[in-house]
Image 1 (cartoon, rainbow, N blue to C red):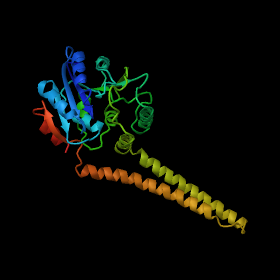
Image 2: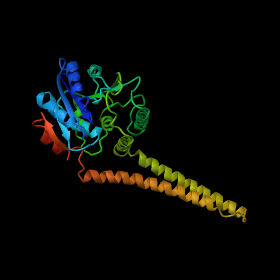
Image 3: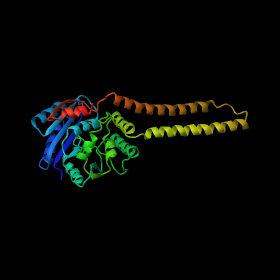
Image 4: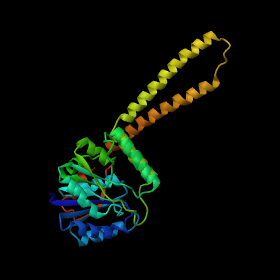
Length: 319
């Protein structure tokens, strides 16, 4: 049985739900565990920072990490992992779509010896576009990072202290937590949980943020896109070589054959498109390498409450 538990809550414009979430978390979990709640404000534009600060200043079991700007959900979670101290950390959103009472299911499964326990749902109460994006993300993750095809990558999950300690060794600015997890372990399990409709506001995951998340997975945790580009270029080059032989033979057999202006233009467009695609993919990899080497931070902490003795080490490890 796990003795201590950390609940990491990445917050983005969650002023309307934070207080109620903290109350519910303590009601469900405080009698059972040595509990700490880590609230990470990811550059919210509402009053989330002030509310989190007020809660943590009144309650020593609640830590508050205020990031200097919006770094994205995965980077915010990494910030929380750097400051948590529990034997197990559970990552949960701030919108009550995952009820705090379901955390017990994750912990019970974790006690069977797993490194990570993912939640899954019979029905997700997200918009059609968000659900479609999640399905696409899961399909691609199976190809790029070796995720088992039957596993759903949910943001609501529990990770062991072993996984936490390995995760925070990653200091790059483009975090994709599940990609790092599957570099470390294959000891995972899943638990069926409820998924409620969002109580207030709307999801912070825009199409732009979903695309950024996909790019983090594509370019940071797999070289498969580069291999696909290389293979595609080879296929087009081979097709062009075969076409050139065919056109040469046909020209010899039929000297009156008119020159094909349209086919030349189409070929130029196709080949140019493949070249630009390949250059763009290489540029994305090189650009991310440059930004990482140039010291782009994974996160920057503006304020930390109830984190005495940890703030210095966390800052140093994420420069």
